[in-house]
Length: 254
Image (cartoon, rainbow, N blue to C red; front, side, top):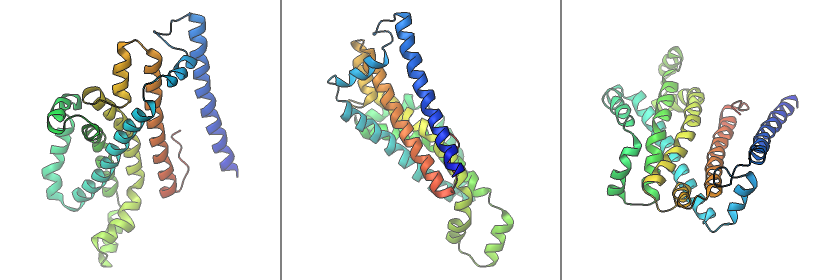
C-alpha cells in the first residue's frame, strides 16, 4: 500500500509540473503582450482544434507511422540480436555494415524513398524504422551476451536446446537491456516519422505543420506539436507498462 501511495504522489507531482508549465506559458503571453502569430496562448492553441485541418485523420496517420516503424524496429532488432548471438560469423560480417548504414543521414535518404516507394505512409514507416532500429539491436544483443557463462555451461551439460536456453535464460536476463533500448527508440521513432512527413508526405501532423506555416497559423502549429508529443508519450507509456508486466517492478523513469 505504501508503494502505491508513493506512485500516486509521484504521478500527482508530474501532473502539477505540467500544469505549472502551462500556467507559466499563459502568464508569459499575457504579461509580455506577445501576438498570437509569434507565440499563441494555451487557449488559442486549443481553439485551433476547431479549425478544418483534419486533426483526427492527420493524427491517425502520424500515429500509424510512428507505431508501424517502432514495431518493425523491435521485431527486427530482437531477431537480428538473436542471430548475431547465435552465429558469430554473421555478426562479424553484417554488424559493422548495420552501424555504417545507420550513419547515413535519414533526411538525405528521403528523396530516394520518394523515388523507390512514392509518397504515402509506407516510406515514413521505413524512415521511422531506420532511425530507431539500431538502439534496440545493440541493447538487446548486449543483454543476450551478459548471461552468466557458468549458467550457460550448466544448462548445456543438461542438454538444453538452443531455443530453451534463449527462452528460459537469455531472454529473461536481457529484458532490462531491451527495454532501455526501446525507451530510447521511442523518441527516435517519433522524430523519424515527422522527418518523413516533412520530406515525402501529403498527410500527417508534420505535413500539416508545413501547410499552416504558410498562413502563419502558429496556434495550429503548436497544436500539431502537442499532438505529436502526445503520440510519443503514449508509446513511451506502453513501453513502461510492458516493462512493469514483464520485469515486475514499477517504472522509475517518469
